[in-house]
Structures are given as structure tokens and as C-alpha cells.
Length: 200
Image 1 (cartoon, rainbow, N blue to C red):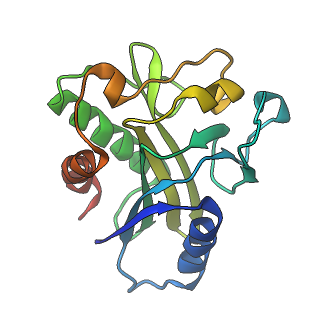
Image 2 (image 1 turned 135 degrees about the horizontal axis):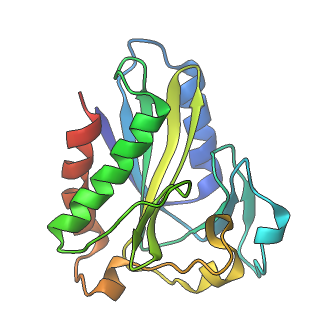
């Protein structure tokens, strides 16, 4: 598993790079994790409905090819894109989603934070507020896109959407849960839990 730390980057070139990587890889291509933050952007998943975009203001809106509804990305949010050969890893889509969610749950447990899943609403929740989102695309047996974990960001832009297509769904982040770690520290710790579950 190759880990690439890409820093704070725009969404569009990364999205195009994920597609190109996935289209040109072969059965011998190593899997990769792309670890990054995005500049402010709303992204619409394939199932997105226009009514869930309430008031985007000056924040760009981008139609993505991942699963799921509308979400927001911005600085202070950890994003891990998972570029895997899921057949080679003996993972179905449901198992991959489950393992990504479990990695977040395990990490939050390490931080003494209780979290949970919701039926038919992928992601992880703390006190009924969403702290981590998932959205994947599978093409030719290869995954791309991945997960986001809110660490210490401006949550106000979430007010401009029905997050993940749910009216009134609130979001939270590690900083609001009294976790005083910067994004570099969280990244280093979280990747340990993630690799335990997806790196064969």
C-alpha cells in the first residue's frame, strides 16, 4: 500500500487524477491511499438531488461520480482516498465500506469517543451528529474516492446544504469534542487503524 500525502489541494485535479489512475491501472498496480485536505467545495454524489443544495453562496459546486449525496469539503477536514483493487484484496463493496467505517469507530474509541453507524446512512455519528462521511466509486473492480473525517474546520458551510441528503442533519468535529490534535497528528494516528483493516 503506497501512501501519498498531497497536502491542501483543489478538488478537480485530484478527481481527474483518481479517474486516470483507476483507468490505467492493471492487476499488478499497487494500491494507494491519497491523504489530503481540499479547498472549500461542495461535491454532489451520483444520487444527489438539487433540493439538497440550499445556499452555496460563493463556494464552488462540483458534480462528482462518487456514491452518495451532497457534502462539503474544506481545510481542517482529513480526506483519505482509497484506490484499491478490491477483488485482489478479497473485499466486496459492502465489506470495504464496513471496514472504512470501522477504522473510524476504532480510532474514535482510541480517543475515548463513542460513535456509531446508521442503517442506510453511511458514515459515522457522534451524539447523532455526523463526524465522518463515505463515498466510493467502483470501476472495473477498482475503488476510488473514500472517506472524510472532520477535525478542526469551519462547519458553517454545512448550513448551506442538507448534508448527505438529510434535512436537519448536524455535523461535528474532533475539535468540538475537546480533542486537541492537529491534522498531522490525527492523520498519523488514524492511518494506523485504517491500514489494519484494509491493507492485506
